[in-house]
Length: 274
Ligand SMILES: CC(C)(COP(=O)(O)OP(=O)(O)OC[C@H]1O[C@@H](n2cnc3c(N)ncnc32)[C@H](O)[C@@H]1OP(=O)(O)O)[C@@H](O)C(=O)NCCC(=O)NCCS
Image (cartoon, rainbow, N blue to C red; front, side, top):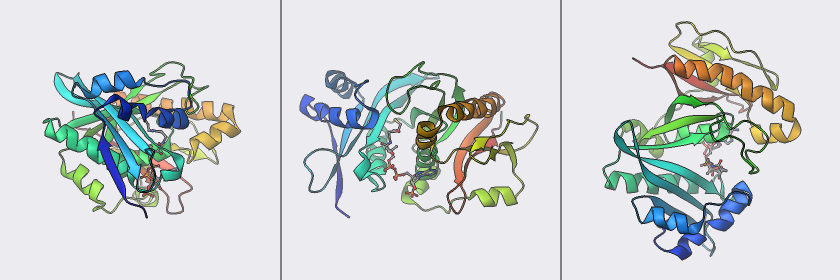
């Protein structure tokens, strides 16, 4: 496995190097201009490029800015992208670690970002590998989006929060925790708020007083969307009908659980103390 390294961007040339990655990962319709990236990097934000040994062009990048939320400083991570050939290499985690180090140096303890709740891979990355959680659901958050990953469906989002100075984050980054499985949650009797019926969503059940709940998501949403746009839209509405009221009632999504054979995935929701 070639060595990986992360370099913080300090000049316009480094910021320009994100553009081909932006174009490749999201398609060329929406590109954050390098001049804006540089302005943000010079004002407390972070642009960092990920390199794979032996390649001149960067393989990925992360971009975020300083923000204020609930009267506290936090870092809002706007983009994380790794080019397809370099996925599953650990580079994405390295980029998040660099972002975490940058924020810890600033005395900031939370990094937040938005995530399409139907993207099981991103959910697994965020919850299982980083130790983040989400307790806020936003309907059609960014309105209509033209890029390849988002076009054609309402842009519902979970607002992901990553408490970077916690034992949980530390242990997840070190891979030091045995992760729960979907079968484990099922055998403990965790109730399905939304179950899948084959590759289609069922109907969201009513909330009761469960401490834990499961919400099914498709295993590969982009593939499903390319195959059947109507089915993708049904998933969007079904997951919205489950997660939106659950978040409003005080549940947080804390894991994306997978079945042992990886053919099924579901959010584990936990009721938060008020
Ligand atoms: C998000 C992104 C940066 C993650 O990088 P990556 O290299 O794919 O991430 P990793 O391989 O380290 O982690 C993904 C994990 O999800 C798992 N995974 C993949 N598909 C999955 C699925 N359908 N369901 C559940 N888990 C899945 C992988 O197995 C991996 O876990 P593992 O290392 O334990 O095997 C990259 O996929 C990307 O650029 N995506 C497009 C842009 C994007 O969506 N960015 C995020 C929002 S801004």
